[in-house]
Length: 447
Ligand SMILES: Cc1ncc(COP(=O)(O)OP(=O)(O)O)c(N)n1
Ligand SMILES: Cc1nc(C(=O)O)sc1CCOP(=O)(O)O
Image 1: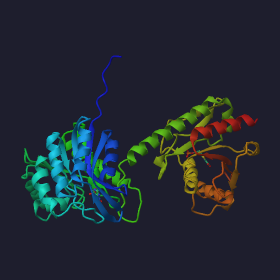
Image 2: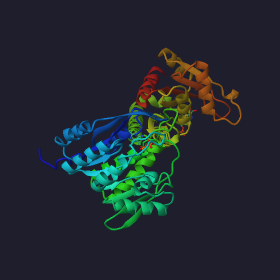
Image 3: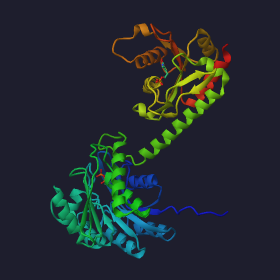
Image 4: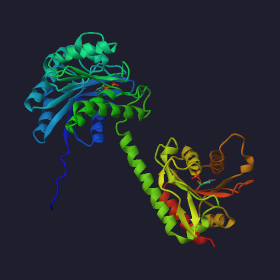
């Protein structure tokens, strides 16, 4: 075969502790590496018994165990960029310095000292070893304000303090310093010692869900640098990445919620699948000559939600509905997110009861359609528009009423209409393409 070879996947490493709660340390780092599409490897320095409320115990590994892990990976794989996180003890810091020199690694240091929720992660006496032996070997270090203050020996409460601290840290022999701004405001400060230039990297301040954000930020920097981004580009991408990972934090545990580095990747996959299922459904409906007779006067739509859907933008459906034209079903517009309201309300009411029911569509009401549904063994429930209280959304209220009456989400929810309101039958199920097949089968059973 000829043609260009695929670009090599960069291989990176994290030298850090494990967090049993899955929020920080190597868990955050490896998820972040995966989200950036680089191959992540790890050398564990310490096993922490940790959760969202803090660090309960730490079990530091012997320096030889850390060295062995680095050796195993570096003698087998082509590694350039590595990051360090929790280094725990002077002995481990010294060993990591030895390995960085031996394997000529480009190092990003996240100078982890303590966990946000409480618990020391670097012994007091190890700080001077970190300052004297490891920091001079690194390309970039990413302290937060309090870590920058501890290294520089000054309190860091303002941007001017952060600038002074960054210069002092650079004077230790560090090429670039990024004082991350989560504790001051949302702005990070990047200092490049060769040029003496400061660059501000602004971000969005997000409250809560920040456990593991420092680890995620430095892992994102490492991944971007391994992909040959410039320092400033890497700093901007890492900032953007950490903000969206905090925004997607999942509420686990009773304390500081962990960041969710893979949240966006999974959401993108969900969006791809929802679009795919609805597009398949539209093809099934438009390819079937029988289906046209099930299209109501108001038109029909079919929609599917991504998992964890929160608003209309999380539901894919047909823009402008599906209408009957020349005795065939025709989509008016494209399948896209945020295009539908009615079917979306039905889906949201169903999701509240059963998160597995993600798709709905409406079809023409008739006694014959209801009889065919019963014949097919589908579960039916209904609501009466005459009983609708004032100030509610009909479909939100009506679907919930029908679900309550049925004791779960039925496959079919209908209403018999009202003054100026066409009666409608709605089909509900886990995915849009199966619903479309069901609708075609229903159409075949009626005249
Ligand atoms: C094992 C381990 N390593 C590092 C940290 C600190 O992580 P960080 O990203 O700074 O987040 P917080 O813990 O401060 O929320 C850790 N906790 N555990
Ligand atoms: C008009 C209508 N009524 C429905 C019902 O369930 O009562 S479903 C439906 C079609 C979907 O409409 P849109 O794409 O404008 O949200």
